[in-house]
Image (cartoon, rainbow, N blue to C red):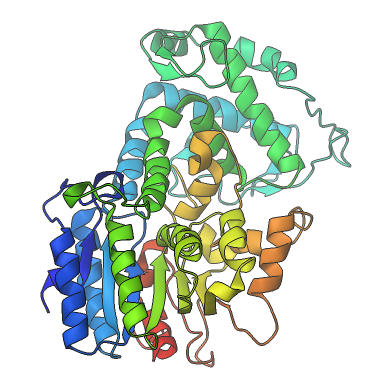
Length: 480
């Protein structure tokens, strides 16, 4: 089968406009449905790859999915939407971590916060006791820094059984503690004079420029305060990842490339925009295909349409469901399947949980929280998974932290501190509804029910999990 028979490339702003080496056109979509008609196609599956990959990898994934779906007599339509998030974020994280300023700030923050938060290490140092520079250097040289740290004491009133712990009530309470350490480090002052970084929520707004020592002290105090606050309210992502998240949010959000995630989400919505008054490549590719699908459904009401999305593909599907319900509610989707979904829980609640008449069956495959934490995004630097980084940094371009993400078990379980959040409670009831089998956590055992098996221990590998007992086998079983 020719690639044009099943791949739809989404260009800039969700249109047909060319931007890469492969381009789809409205004529390609017309010919696709002409072949559907000629071949009497009645079972169609729309597949949306994740937000990690670029056009080349997205096309390669589409080719693999075409083989899987065609083997069970499903006609695939694979959307390739040129996201490339992983390339951008991983590259930028690496560049940030190599700067002298970042190295200095990490050492200052980990040393101070290990003491403040009551963390202990194997040697038995207690809460309130500062780590030595040598200990900090040893930990930061590990592939997973501070992996063995355990929290012993943390009370909001600042009193523990073994040590007195003084927790701040506002960021300014910490400025004095960082002032001496920063001002006494002449190398840091010299580095700072040559660094251009973005400070958030300050009088300089989001502008880039050289910052002075006083402003850096305020920013570091703010970072430390937010880390402590997240531990107090139990919304931390473990010691080292939480420090990295807050440091990135405060000083490096522009350099990280959080805008890539926001632009990708915008594109996943724009692709379904109305094409009235538009023509040619200026039309929105997703909507053009959907309108063809509607015409095909009107001609053959018995057709079955499935939706499968990996990672950010779940966001595109939620946006499709909203548009579909508004324009052609007669189309009820047969199966909706998510793999490691990166969509926000509120979006999922709004478009699926609250509108279960839009589809017949739902299932998602994702990792247990333990496995999610061991899916290291960038060794030595960000040691949790991509979904954790999305939750902790990328959502709302750094303005939010611990955003509720559907693919994270910690959020959908609705355990404290998330047991009072309405969208989480409603989603939890839907996901875990008795007898529905709507979620499977990797890795499943050999006795797992067929259709509920998944083995991937990497966010990006769910769509490659095609061995016996893997996710692809389960998806194929469902779609049969």
